[in-house]
Image 1 (spheres, rainbow, N blue to C red):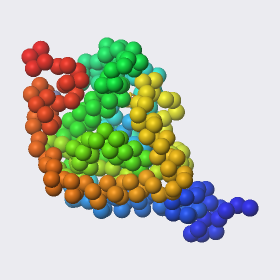
Image 2 (image 1 turned 180 degrees about the horizontal axis):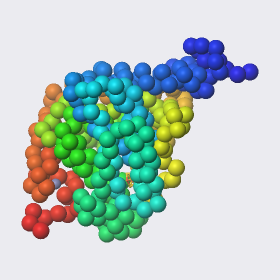
Image 3 (image 1 turned 90 degrees about the vertical axis):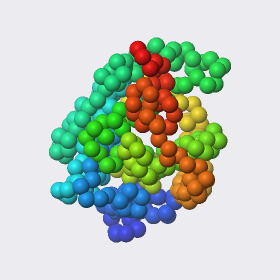
Length: 316
Ligand code: SF4
Ligand code: ZN
């Protein structure tokens, strides 16, 4: 017997253990879109003449973010939406997704900017992995060794923020889903990194930093994947060859097990974090911004993370 949608009599396509609801395709779409709209309204209200930059890698999360921004704000003449794709230079992986990002932005009629690590830093991610001996160091005993995803994340975020600022963006959308949020919160707890925990929230405006907006932060990863699939959106079909963030994978496994046994755990974690951060922020001021002495980009130290990672010197 087919299970019916809780809201109508059509066959259900998904069961949400945390809400106890079976939903058909129409009501599943409505649910995803409602959650994204609610997050935007409550946490990142859009103002007249906002310029919304969307970090668009061509993976499921960023594709869904872009489509939702287009659906929610696309018919507002005062709002400009710009997709920004960063080409990290990962052979056999990113080149495929860049093609798909071009197709999707053309189809939706959305402005699209592509910038690369090579243009910005003179090196591709593939070259950096070799230069910094990331694969060899993966097996070293020095636990402080930084893996490819840390490099990639820091370098990508820097270009995204820079391009967003250049085009006058007032918001920068990133595709973090509920699973990503819950994992990052747990990771920061495990590392005891309270400052980063507060910074990660950053729903406030900081000099030179464009507000990072996460419309998917209350939507589970599985639902994003299904929504992307049913809308025929770009998704990662191949795995990045440099992905080996062991700690995050462990946390992901742990949270997924918890979620199976105790549905709603990821939501609770994010909800608790949202309540906690304003309280901690009162005691810990992370709003002081400096400018990197090397590249001039905003950061919270004398030299930004990207310049440290690339070992740039003040005078080259
Ligand atoms: Fe970059 Fe890691 Fe993502 Fe690969 S998996 S694109 S290295 S962040
Ligand atoms: Zn710098």
